[in-house]
Length: 156
Image (tube, rainbow, N blue to C red):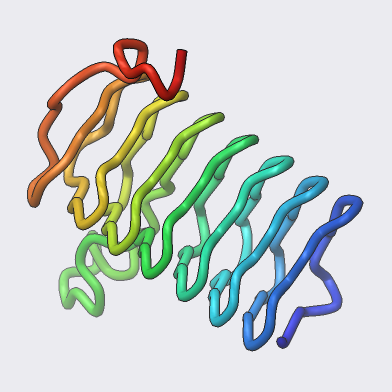
């Protein structure tokens, strides 16, 4: 793995093989970073006990809360119009906030400028194009609300 020396790490952080952590990243206690993850640099904060599985890509300008789960091959983006020629849009970073206890399935795409509310559940393979309210279950491409986490036996 390649971990920039400026990375701030809490206690018991685990970084698996071949991960890349660029400058300006802050990792809370007991964070687990899977194989081949890329944390693209700061500002980027990951809260305590959050787990990123293999091949996760997180852009800079992202805040991830505590006790989150991000499935393998998920991507969180921060620029809506890469290499735009109009100066008003050129490399404009739109931060993403993933609140506490969010669960994101494998192969998801989170677009720039969104807030994923606490305790939300994003089904595998979803493309999230709009912010998600707390406790919502979303799935699909584009992701649509299909339920409420509080009704699931697994999370009672």
